[in-house]
Image (tube, rainbow, N blue to C red):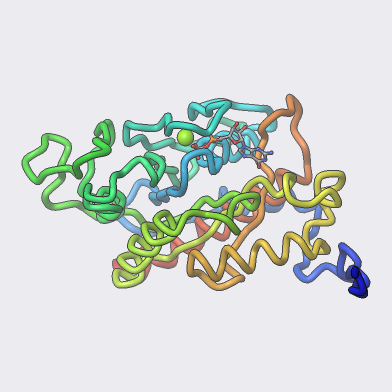
Length: 285
Ligand SMILES: Nc1nc2c(ncn2[C@@H]2O[C@H](COP(=O)(O)OP(=O)(O)O)[C@@H](O)[C@H]2O)c(=O)[nH]1
Ligand SMILES: [Mg+2]
């Protein structure tokens, strides 16, 4: 009985980080974001669509981006303290500004949580329609039926400005391993449409603090943590994009002060998203 030899546990951290992060480069990231140019007469800003399960941290990510860029905590998108029902039912676009109140050339769009759409309700149809620019801001999502072509919020012939230029799946590190296959399939449907249109797809992995004590204590350990590496691989495998398009972040969720290390991870992810969107727009000009 009990003759099992226990294998020695691998150390929780790699000797060296597997991605390089300069934790002093927050200002440089802000400067790069401000310097993004679209060179496109039809476009005022790039449109980035966030989607993912209820409670993944989509609203929190929008607020975290705005907080990082303002140097103080901001609450523009409504977060909820329990992840039961999706709060976001109205299709809304958040324009992003910096601390000098300059509008940055991108907006983050928030849709309802994926599990709120019923199995028969055309699955991820509304997310795909939003991605293709058919849904006007202010539309109230109906969980049981997707938008109809004669709805006043339906845009028949979307302009490049109405369309989405980068798709972002927001996935919590703490739930990726046991995420419902129904949700994974819905994300997969949206991804395959994005890929057929050439729209880039990025994954934001939130709640890294909930899966690794090393990282919870010190965010600069993020790329030394085996746990985080493993969760990022899960995200890549289950959601689809390669590992280089998966970005771990820790949102502002309980703190009341700005944190340089959170900001660096959030702004690195944002810069990658915005550059992908800009490059996509350049190809469809
Ligand atoms: N620990 C932790 N909690 C988070 C993080 N991001 C979001 N949350 C919490 O997760 C809950 C749901 O977040 P919310 O942004 O409303 O999710 P949404 O449904 O995707 O918009 C809130 O209670 C947040 O405080 C994170 O990075 N770490
Ligand atoms: Mg939300």
